Image 1 (tube, rainbow, N blue to C red):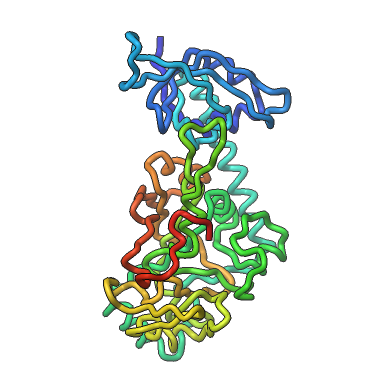
Image 2: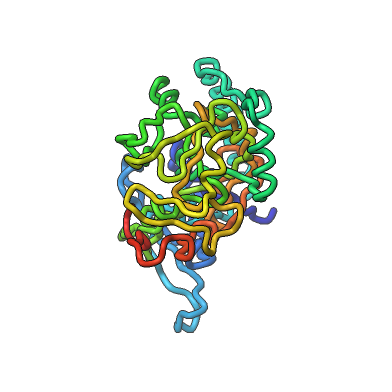
Length: 361
């Protein structure tokens, strides 16, 4: 008898949505759980429409368990098979072959859909095709001196799938104009920058987003509560856009009342001034900041209309279990699990000022 094969749970879940009988074929199989380790599927209870919470019973091997057989029973929400908790499933060769065929068909369909969609979206000029600003040598030299190697765009895992589908990080204007689905951070868009993609330099804006990322998801099916950070990714983008025509920069949050975005080739050095006073009067200084980090962590780079997928250098995720999820939509570039990249850095925020650590931005 041929040995079982470990497969991605997200593919199994996708296939089972079309053929629920698939679930019966994994009863008795091993699974890999991001919290509890490996377990064995004992039973599955499905709701008629597969939308309401369904459950499967798993016995997990827990080292800390006091039972003689080292096993304990857990009931986990079926939604965990989307990859957030159950990351891999051990299946027989026939099912593995069926899943591989499903994956290839889905990738082929997605590629065709992406090609069709892009015929309806304005061409996103790539950074090497965009015109350089008039004084582009100065910002290029400045980036080199400061060892600035990347821009960072924070988004959700769901949006990342959409970015893979369209082939670019698109501005709000293009997304809305073509009625594309996406999750919105700022529904009111206080910065009014609907023609731009917001990025940070070197490190993400933790003051604005940390509370949102690390809010625990108190769901009865998740024990312990899973932080929302697992639903976010950071896209690391090459910094060339800073010396291209159309890019703007702002020394504080672009949505602030006192914000005044200006052409990047002119305003870049101002982001690294010895002191930046933001709209609330907080004084940000160079103290404890590396050379490649702006004086105010909320400083932004606004890239006009969009950023092509080829300009994404790598994807950052908080946990090794999230790597496969980031690759699921067909991304073949680097994915790095870096918990520290999502951290709140107290030393980079003015001492004695309000902190959003642990709260919601």
